[in-house]
Length: 438
Image (tube, rainbow, N blue to C red; front, top):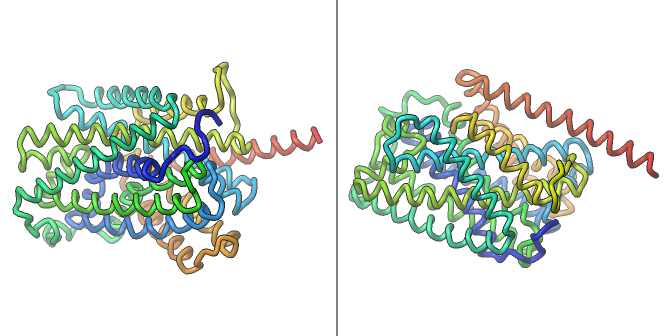
């Protein structure tokens, strides 16, 4: 499986990978999107998202503790459903949601970087900068685990410290006013219950980076203990960071101002408190955060898809490329992310990612509940709660998109249908080929 070796990631390194993916996308890409759907309640939406993600993480932790594997999510699904179309399709949906996350972060990198320059055609330069970042992240990833672990650890520390400095500084500038903690009724009355739940869907997407740790599996030292610890620590760190930053932004800007600058809302929030220096500082942290997020995400998804290939759950072609399968998957992952970065905006990318992730997550919970609960000693009540919460959030989010952006639903449904039919055809073909050989 290439250069990635068993026991090559420390507990600290795996936490850095998890927080690298989550904070890279969550704060900088999704804060404005969540605020647009929930008004001044958005800091609390991030807290609720953390609670739901905590229930979701339970399934992953229980199975990973029992069966730590570099296959991660694919391993969980295969344990639950066997080598079936459901296993292959759900695994591929997870991989696609991770690739979508990469394009989300890449465009966020472009949006924040352009705040330092005066350019006329931002719609052109955002994807150009995003594509450039993806290429750089690809080059770093082909260097292997050791460089990735070290760079992720350093950048995770820098960005978390920087974001906390931003949050505390912004709150200091408004004398730690309670205004950001108390939702304003006048700005919240136009939001429906479905809209709030839709915001929850996006906030959950901000936390889904914990699955990166699951996909690293037995590459983490002492995986039966440290996979679960890494997930819990990463979620706790991100919950604190998200809430503090949301509180600071809510104290500095009105909802209309946040929505106007939703693709770069933290940079806008820095201006009233710190002026140009605050802008430079915030954009600098955003650049570090998005770079580390991309590196960690590409690492995880290429590793996962390589494992899917070894498990004969997805087809693979070398296309004349030398080297191992894992390196080929790096190429495919980055190419797909580049296409998404060029052709989709932040809102649509985030929506597709949320839909794919929630569908896959429900398949995980149902599989563990139905087939693995006794084996891994999981609590049925927690599993059912996680399943119901995902279902409520998904249905509400689909309802919102049905009235506001039906194209996202059509594209998402088409991709899921293609994935299911394609996997069914591939697995049937593989089974017939193996039967004929025997």
